[in-house]
Image 1: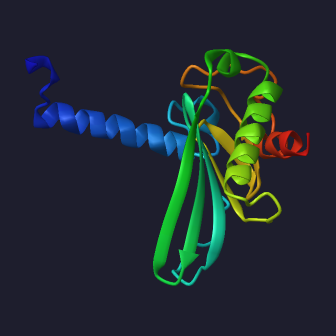
Image 2: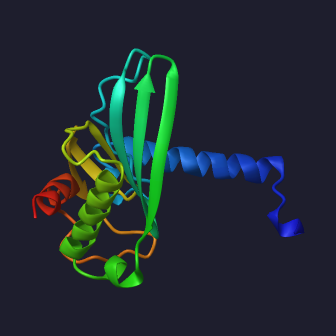
Image 3: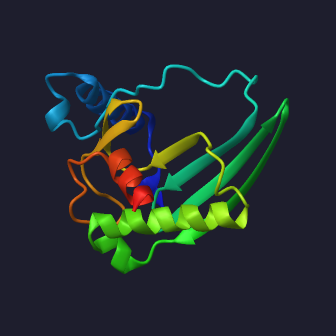
Length: 167
């Protein structure tokens, strides 16, 4: 384990390298070749505690996809969620197959919670490098975490989700 113990000088060197990479990622001129990609966000405000109602949250971040129902009632917050596994053939297949699977999981969750007829605000956590071009527009830069779905890199994943839900 000795080789994993960092002295102050090595720790400082790692910090300096990470900061430089983050600065490169933030730089308009150096972003394309930066190791650490830093993309702007279009979120304009954070919750202030006055929000009420039901909200859906989607989380695709690895071999599982999670759907959450978040209920905000004053200072009371409750959550229900279901985790859906992502099979390897879906992780490696066409992007339409992945998004159709996500749409089916959402439909199953809404059906189970008797919410199919409700129109709910939705947040989508897509935990892959994404170039956001607006609050509801994000293009996949590259796959990570073992995913290699064709037809997704360079495309708007929000649009792909909308199309799958429509199908």
